[in-house]
Structures are given as structure tokens and as C-alpha cells.
Image 1: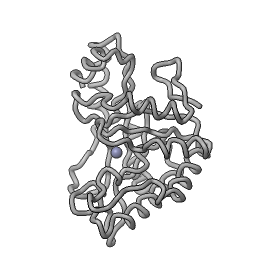
Image 2: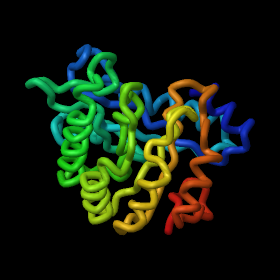
Image 3: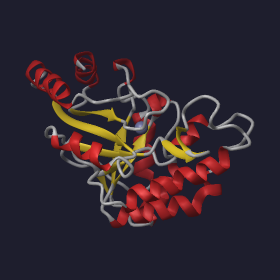
Image 4: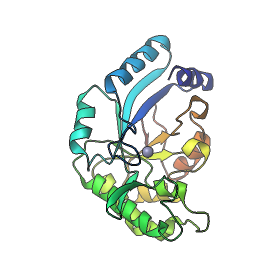
Length: 242
Ligand SMILES: [Zn+2]
């Protein structure tokens, strides 16, 4: 975290948020991403003291909180978290919840149907009463799409728009996740649909997982979000608004 703060100051970033994962689904391993909120907040405080010129927000990315309401509530009750992301990584497939990022899950035969399941799961999250603010990486399986298949947003336009509409209704913020500058999640078309469906705000995430990847891909993401009709906020911790 300290190294990430140092990088942020080098880039001239005025503010960053650390949104660590809290995942509750025991796939593929039960030890995955159990977040120690108190320990995490200690680290945040240490970084705030060490880097007073950087605005440092706390946060969390809750994985499938609508399926793990008690566990998610425990995380949120454990301390003050400035940014709460809601996300889906896992879908029910063959009777178990599987993470679509795991090798061998998104095969060429199954990928389109799994994407359909993914968007249904995302709609369930958005229509739940879970108190998250930012909707993370709405087309996450795209990152792991089989090479043998072409990926095209328009193939999933209807269910994607249903998710965006419901998210706009609950006042959510859409995350544009740059996947460490590899893949825009979502790309320009979906950010345009977000605006058309009434979406009011956009947040940027690099999903860095490593200090060297902080803000990677933000220049392109900012261009795409601006082209879709959103403008930067005056406050460096603010969302981009329409
Ligand atoms: Zn995620």
C-alpha cells in the first residue's frame, strides 16, 4: 500500500482509494479474499500519516453480497469504508458457484451461456437491497473470453441495458475498470448505454493488485468516458458526472 501511495504521488494523482476484495464464495478455495477489515484500516491510517499530501479513501469490493448478505454486513459493520463496490465474479453453473476467471470455466462452448448467467446474477445484485454504491466491471467475463470466439457487446445489449437501467434507478455509480491497461471493463459502447439509460456517475478503477499498475489505462478510459458525455468533478475524490 505504501508503494502504491508513493507511485500515486509520482504520477501527481491527488487521491486514490484502496478497495480490497471481500469474497465469500468458497471457490476455488475457502481461504480466498477473506478481508481483515481492522488490519486493513490500520494500514490505511499508517499510509495517511506517511503521505499527508495524498487524499486516501478506504473501500471494499464485495463479491456477490446479495448471496452472502450476513457476511457482507459483517464486513461493512467492521469499520468505516468510504467506497463500497458491489461486484459479481461467480455464477451458478452445474449446481455450484464458479468464478468465471478460473481457467477452464469459460470454454468456447459455454461462454455465451455463462455470460447470460453472469448478467442475470448482476441484475439480481443490482435489484437487491445491498448497500453498495459502485457497480464494478459489468462485463467481467469478457476478460476471460475464449480466443476461439469473437466478443461483441451488442450480442448482450438487452441484458446489459437491463442491468444499467436498474443500476441507474438505484443511483449507482458505474465503474470503468481498466484491467491494468489490458481491457476496458466496460468499453465505450456500454458507457454510452449507461448515459442513455439514465446513469449519472462514473468511477475509475485500475484493478492494479500491484503498485506498478496503479492508474494503468486511465488516459484512454478518461477519453472514452468524456466522449460518452461525462465530465470530471472539481473534487479529486468525486465521481465524473453527466
Ligand atoms: Zn472484481
